Length: 194
Image (cartoon, rainbow, N blue to C red):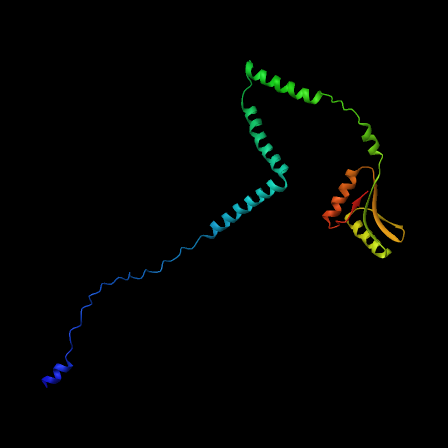
């Protein structure tokens, strides 16, 4: 029996000589929920920033007007709050005289311009803009109708079997260019001025 006991006896466990080099697992950190008010306020601020950038790029005159109004209000408020002194100081009177003289110089000054004789000749010249030509009258009429939807009046003229869609006559090239830009903004890019 002793043999049996010795066989079934548990042997002492070996001691592990290696050190544990693994770091213990970190507990999962819980994320804090962000406040929806923070998202709302940041969205409003980003929208305002976008609108200001759009105004600065596409319509800077509106921004200038707003800034002028803001800077003009404090000046009028400051003038109304200060009491007028009985004796104006010498420095302020000199500055106001200079400013007044400069303003009067600009507004009361007449400018003489010599008329160029070549300019008078060019003003009598008439310009015509042609936006298309077709052998088929229906196509020319269709183009004329499309131009009419833009707000310009065109005419179809037949010459040598071609139906030409023309606008004009214009008294100046600037007026013709203005109408051509309107047409280009509406994808009519083939218009030529003569």
